[in-house]
Structure formats: structure tokens, C-alpha cells
Length: 346
Image 1 (cartoon, one colour):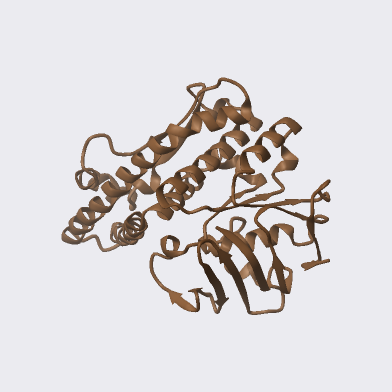
Image 2 (cartoon, one colour):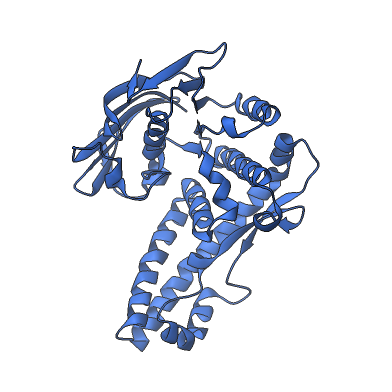
């Protein structure tokens, strides 16, 4: 899978710009604040329909405008056109001029993996960021996971509403039962996915670190041996007092163990960064094995944070990928590049 061209209209600082890209490594360079990261943000948005930098899509609209459009041509065994239109707080995703409504993440043939400087906080930051990463990666592989995740979140909202006000015993039990079904499915799929990740992760991590260090990901679930439904009902009295559902897949966590210790507490910033990079490289490998799809790799100023040795190891590892797009403030030596200035190719 490669992206051959992308057009950005009223997206961030881009007015109306079309950029052509090639297979292999593409270097995007220019001074800070010119639109390099905005370009990668637009490419990644086409894959997952959200920004990796902010939550509010309105802030992606160019100042003075009320909408944005991203259009691109992708190429694998066949050519496809993807388009996202956003206006009036609504986004519409088109595949070959046909709008998609459900299971977009799975139906979308365009997949990306984005690496960016703030990702170092994945392990050291809040649990919701880790859940979000794993939920998105599993959803790329399994449409049923995406379905149960959406179902669970909708039921959770209803359940919390009746815990806050106008408690209804019968409705509470019905919601707990339905939540339990989706909860058990989510937990099962998360455990299965981690088995695949942990099979490849140590080798990939050691290839970057060049040291014989152990690493694995553990799933810290609220559920031990009971079914989710039983657990939800057991907590009823406590949750009526707290007025919310305090345990469930929505509060579970993923822990990275480095040398059998939590990397969040014992790992250096450099080790945390490499652990995130290795995780994402492993997720790429699992995605390719499960779907036969080749994601486009996006590196947003990541190389500047690595020493020369680790930078070379990462580039060598990525060279076998179909397409890599790298941003940098420096013009690449002995390589062609695309210079961006004020949202335009020059």
C-alpha cells in the first residue's frame, strides 16, 4: 500500500495544495511551523478519522474557513480514492466516491502507523492513551471488536446515567447483562492480541537497543475469573454510592515490563521512547500478518530524538516497508526531498 498523492484544502495552514509521493522513503523538510507535521496529520487522519495531536476537529480547519477536505489516491493491487469532508461538526468519509457509515476503520483500505515525539508518554502517561492505542490497533484487524467497543461504550453511558439519577433496578440488570457480553468479548480479544504482540516484541526491541533486555506487555484487567455480568452486578451497591461504573474494560490498563519492572516507573526516557517505537513496529507486523495490508509509516520529527546508532537501526528496519514518510528540519543528504514552506511545496 502506498499513497501516490494527497490534496489538502483548508486543513491547518494548507489552502489548497496537492503533494505527490513515491514508494520507499519520502523526506519532508522545512523550518519549524511551516506545515510538515500538518501534512502527516492529514495523511494519518485519512486512516483513522481523528488527529493524533488534538481532539477537536474544528481546530483542524484553516483560520477564517468553516470546513476542510482531504483527498488522496492510494495504490496497492488496485487504485482507490479516499476523501474526508468535514463541516458543521460532521465528517464524511468516501471510498471511491461512495460514503461509508459503519466499520470505517476496518473497511478503509488505507492504514498508517504514526510515530511522533510526544509518544514517549504512552507508557508513562494516563491509561486511557494506552487503551486508545490498543483499541484502535485491534479494531483495524477485527470489525467485531470495533462493534463491541462501540456497543460497550454506549451501554456504559446509559448505565452511568441511571446510577447518577433515577435508579431503575430492572434497567440496571438489563444493561449489566448486555455490557457483560461486550465486556467479555473485548477482554478476550485484548488478551489474544497481546499474545501476538509479545511473540515479536522482544526481538524487535532488542534489534533497536542492541542489548539482551527483556520486554513484554501485560494486560491489567478488572476481571479475574468471574464473568463480566456477575462482576457488574456484585458492585451494584458501591456503584450506586459512587454514581458511576468504576470497573470494566473502560478502566483496564496495559503495562510494559522492562527487565520485569514497570517501565513507567523504572525506565529512562530513552528506554520508554524505544519501547513505544518497538511496540508500534510490532503492531505493524501483526497488522500485516492478520490482514495482508501494508500500512504507510509516518515519522514526525522522531529521528532528531534518537542518537545516530539507533536512528540508523530504525531506518534500516523500515527500509523493507513499502512507503515511509519522514519529516525533518534539515534537508536530507544524498536524498531527494519535498520542502514545505507556509503550507506550500516549494
